[in-house]
Length: 123
Image (cartoon, rainbow, N blue to C red; front, side):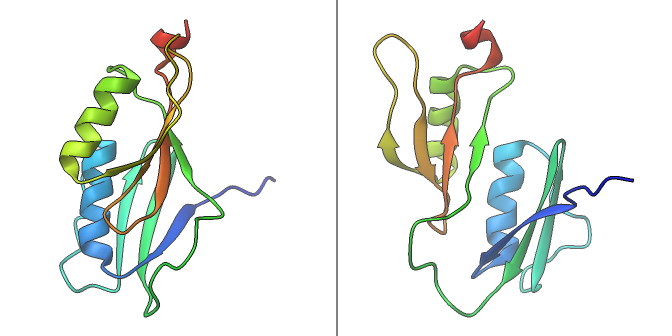
C-alpha cells in the first residue's frame, strides 16, 4: 500500500480570505463549512487539496515550497492577467520572447507561485 499526499498545508494569517483567493484561482468552491474567522479553510481541487491554517507569525522569507500552475483552457499570459485581477502580484517575469518561460506571482499573503505555459502552448 502506498502513501499519498492528502493536503498541501499553507500557514497563513487569514485562512478564510486566503482560501477564498485560492478557490477563485483554481475555480473550485471553498469548503462548505468554512467561514470567516475559522482557524482553517479547505480548497479541495483536482490533483491536490490545499489546507490553509492560521498561524500567529507573519511570512518572513521566500517560500521553500511553491505551486506551479498550468492553465487548461487559457494561455499562460491570459492566466497571469486573470490572477493579477484577483489580487495576485507579479514578482518575477521569466517569460521569454519565444513564448517559453514562466511568471512568478505572489498571492494576497505573499506566497510565491508560478504560472507555466498551457499544454496547448507546449504542444
